[in-house]
Length: 154
Image (cartoon, rainbow, N blue to C red; front, side):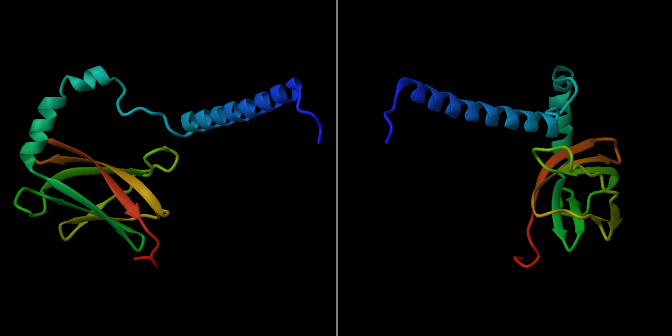
């Protein structure tokens, strides 16, 4: 076995740190490339009306519950009494929480008080950004999590 000298230790240290730095650069590049990181264009402007909008939304008493089975996304929106909420308009963004390249905007139709759309989603964790407008113009916004499992697992 050869003698371990200073230049060997230096080469090992430079190689190890080189690998670590290279991996960090690749991961940072992937993170920036796949997720824009913006929730709103201007956080200060959005904060000016946040409390008023939150109180109005809470006064509606609405609850939104997503479900996904057999390639069909369903969204149940109920009012404070547990009845189907009267929704003037509804938009949903379905995507991954960490990447924007899988984002979809399905067109949901109301069937028997439940909003439905055919949608192909891969297994894993999904996020739904729900924006609905009540008949009085009150905006309802909610971010929901949806877990899609293999059909064989149930």
